[in-house]
Every structure is written in structure tokens, then in C-alpha cells.
Length: 338
Image (cartoon, rainbow, N blue to C red; front, side, top):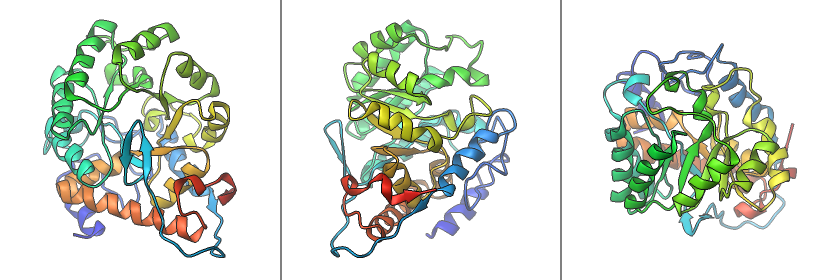
């Protein structure tokens, strides 16, 4: 299977909202929710993608010719590449009913592990979503990161019990999910969290706690004070607030402020190995990619996931070699420019 064939297959079954575009840049789907679009006029998702394209990479092949090492160490785990599949929920509503969240995660989690990375899994109003996600992670030997919505504490504790049972190596909370239109006025309620509330959740987790949805230095410092082990610089793919800055715009200042105190991940419009390189150069330790992994599952199941991971990995290796960086630690901010 080629990537072109993957996209063609996906278009036959992915639903009416997603067009499985050659490049997932937010332009066609714009504000289609339900669907893969963004909030308001869809500006934030489009901006996420475009700001990575506005960055250029500095080529430098006057260096020793040696193998490229893309290995990432994170929370005691070793990954082949510094990227992960991002969490997604309600795939049957936003894409098509070919998959439920449970069947989607069954494919994604195992395929990611088999190909050297890990998947973050989503959460939902239906308790079966988290139960299915953590079951898939358990089958993968704990290689996955369940992502819990910012519910009330009682509900969070119930979900953390499933996380612990799965032996997941880390757990995340997408705090910005409080802005998802279809989560408002739901039972149990989802909402923003104070530092004290977040600290309590981090303590209850008992494993590395990742706070997803950080877009300012102030928020990053709050996550640090709450005991987070990592943050994800993310605006939820533009799905929670229109007219946000792109993640590429805020990542450098957040990375500079945080330093080595927290692991930094970033998502939002990252679509190629070259984009991944740019994110690492701006200060990220790793990246998350969401929508194209959905397309990969719909277009090719486990084989599609493998194909997409290999595509990203080869693009990253090529960019690193052409810029004179032969390990992730050698990627520096002077290797990119506006």
C-alpha cells in the first residue's frame, strides 16, 4: 500500500465531513463539527498548519556522514521516534460508524506499539470509551497514554482506576476540552481546573501526569506548580476556541520559560517529518499528531498506521541528516528560520 492508496481507501469509508485530503490543513473542513473541523470559522486549525510551513529549515551537509538516531527516551520508555498519535474521541460521530472508539483504539494502540511509538487515547461521555481505551493499552503492555477529560473528581477517580489497571506508563488530561461544545452541560460535567484541583489529580494518578492544552507561559507555570511531569502545547486543534495563536507561535517562549523542568510536547497542524524537526528545534521534546492517524486507520487499519509512521520517520531522518543533526539532542533552534 502507498500513502496515496491509503487516502483513496479512506475516502470510501471515512464519512461525509472528512475528505481525507492529501494534506490535512483545515481548509476544506473548516468549522465542520461534528466532523474534523474547528470552532468558529475554523481559523485556528488553519493557522496551526500554516505557521509550521512559514518556518524554513537550514540545510548543512558539511558534516560527518553517519547514521541518524531518532530515539526518544520519555518516562523510562524508549521510542523509535519522537512523535505520538494524539487522542481522539467519538470517531463514529465525527467520521463514520465504520469504527467505534473501542475498535479504533484496538487498531491504533497496538499498531503504534508494534512500530515503535505510543498512542494517546481519548475519553468520552460514555464510560465505555475509557474502558475500551485502557483495555487496548493493557493488551499493549501499558504502551499508551489515556487522556482523561476534566470531569468532576469522582469521575476522574473512576477513570484513573482503569488507567492503573492498564499499567499505562503515563496519563494525560486535556484541560482545554472544557471548551468543547458537545461537552458543555453534559453529565458528568467537564470544566476548568484550579492549580489545587490539578495537584490533587496528579497525586491520585501516581504515574507521570501530562497536562494537555497549554498555550501560555502562565499556564505552563501553573501546570508545573500542580505537579505535572509534562505539558502538551495545544489549542485542541482549534476545536475549543477560535482566533487562537498557532502552537508554533507560542512554543518557543513556553519552552524558554519551562527549560528542563517539564517535558514539552506539542501538537496542532504538524503533518510531516520536517514539521516534527521544526517543533523539536523550537524546544519540544516530542510531538502529537491527531487527524492524519484517523485517516490512516480508516484507510488501512494497522497497515495504514505502520505506513504513516514510517513515512513520518523517514521524512524526519532525511531532514535531520540534511541539517547536520544526527540525534535529537543535536537539533537546535538555529536550524530553523522564519
